[in-house]
Image 1 (cartoon, rainbow over the protein chains, first blue to last red):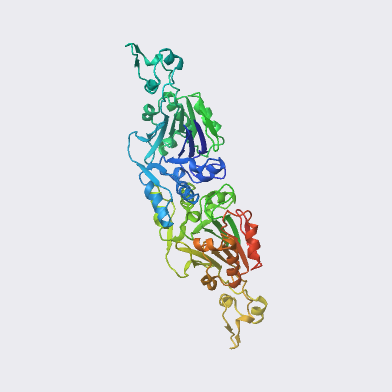
Image 2: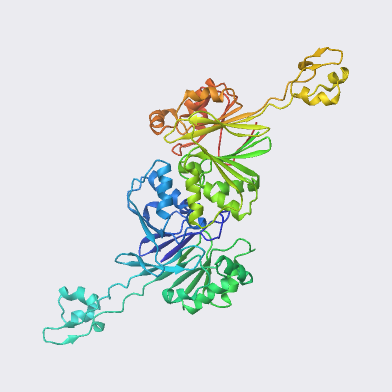
Length: 301
Length: 301
């Protein structure tokens, strides 16, 4: 599982910082998460193949999370994209994109599907044979979702030596890998655990930006491998964080601790601070496994 | 008169090239012309003060000319702008900007005025005591205007020696500077030309992007100091230029020649060519005073 940060700063794009966008590479699928202005240039800088992006998840309709989307959709047209493109985001997203395409008297030469999110409870928004994506309802000034990406538990690897010792016919292997017990021709029941190994542990990634400190997300993100949690402010701006419905680094770390996640990635920094190292310092007073997102950093988990 | 090119390439923003946007500094007014994605970052790179931009002219609603506008409007909010902001552009521009602000549950903390253009003939869109801006109707795939920025002819400078020799009272100076003749107390008529000098020549700038080769613009841009004319293609792509309703470098130069302008600035280059020097070479076979726009170049006239 690989996470590439295209942008992780709050508010306006600047010469050296970009608004929120990131690419999650999980089980060979590339998911684009949020798409602030300049995302398509950041994709180029990070040498990410445009044609590999088939699913875009938009957390909410504040500009620093989606103003780059319409440009990316247009660029896909110019690049003669063929693949379907799926966009998951709040109500209004279809309206604003289609209006802009209509005004430019153009339409996509590929299929563009909008999956409009309105639920206030967690729901599955994407699922294939290897990955499942669910929403994480967040509390922010407008309707906002985080997204939980989770690899599905794969088949149980066959214990080849064991199945051969019982002389089990190959036609049963598929069922065994799915976890089923086997009754031999002599009537003896062989438990699956004797025929297989435990499956390879699956990875999970929870993206939570933007949100006020909110413990109600903990059951959804419990024990994920990686939690990206916004930390717009430091604790000294706690009052401002609450007012603007953002979080502090300390609050992000508290959520990480209570949800017992493996790693916490911080991001969505206000640009008022001298150094983003301050965010890590503050978070580590609560939780030890803290990583700092920064534009064009790439994490492998 | 100073022209700063923020971006001058066609189609998609890339790591090294930006879509159309430029700033004209004329009589101490800063006019932003077009606003492709990334314009606000280009403004920062070129150290142009955001607060000095009060008027934005949008030629047409193709993404490479206006996808950066909503982000700039949002950034003005975050920067606590106070001044009114005026936006001049085609029908639909108000709808698309206000929809996006509404979806983010925000509104500007400054006055935002839209001046919606629909006329198919040239019209005055802006006028103050020193500058006048008129549209240049262009022929492109969608409704498009260029813009002609013209300094107004100022007062006639007083010939102080002459007025003193006639013992003319100071209370008449204002009228004389406006070009009026004077009758002395003895009844003698003094022609204005004896009392004043010719006014300082005024500058003019015509922005024409995007357009097919179209001689009907010539009467509007006749003898301007600077003509920016798009040259998306070279002449070898003449057929493609016509099909996409763009111009070649040779065609841009032909317009410059026939309109008898002083300088031609080329831009809106397709990125298919090895070097933009090819555009200059081609144009100079027709017209001698050719300048190449490039991102972050600045011309003083």
